Length: 394
Image 1 (tube, helix red, strand yellow):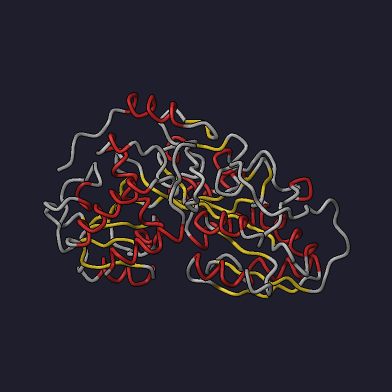
Image 2: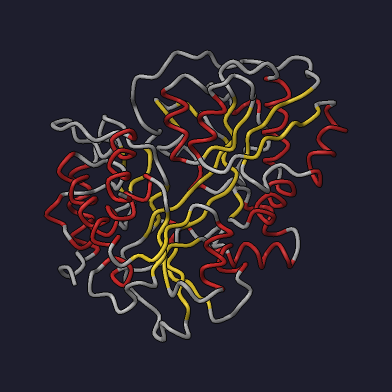
């Protein structure tokens, strides 16, 4: 196994010295101090709303736009909702660049690409009344959707990429990700891993704890040497992985069918296996995670309907309906007080537990400007991560 995990205090000290554009939480994870400062296209922000258009075209994850709440929105606003479900962040970026859509439910591995590409516009939060005090603090002003102090996204929900395991096989709860990464894992050949370039960050999180000399303080800010180290670890893991997953249904089937004993998962996927023998844990190294936000197209043909949708879905009841349907922590904490069922959902998904999420590094698009504050090196960008990921899979 790799060297002993860095103590929390030692890691904090190193991280605090390295961060300039960001501030460090007490556990060493980075949060935005007004977001990230980079050069982005000058897209004007809407100052006031006008009359509603007749429709709004939305690219979203499955479960985010459903008749149960979109029909009521149409009745209230007159805006017909046209939904296009996307399966990956790459697909969302491609679809938004066609100019055919007004809104997208972007994860952090897409948002910076959309902002830097001039594909989305700054959001005037004064025009989103439901974006208020009940939105959890951990989803406000984050580095993946707030640039130069300006918000580009309104949060929907969040979740961690946890370690799921079959307790019939893995009889003791793992405390470390080492069982999924190290060559001598007793579960070699029964491990499943996420299939996407952003998974490189999971390797970086592990290296932050086990190879501190690499100097990684943010898993999305990797110089070439650090990226090479992450790729080496991923290639090592490749030899013990039985399967990679991008389709959630395939991941569930792999666990339920007995092919997989442990690996990367989401809480909702563990829950959907519908079997108490499948358990999950957030290991001591922490993990990556995802936080989704509504973003409005820079050239939206229906900006008024788009703003109306963002505000409507930020209300406690609708935001909670989306979170419940998809299986994630809602952005609006007021939902948790609406019923016993809502409270149970929020508890299960750690909705208001900022201590839990302080150990989660939310997906952020890697860019050449090092978002950990370093200015003496160039960091690797998403295209370099994509090319490197292909080398792992080959």
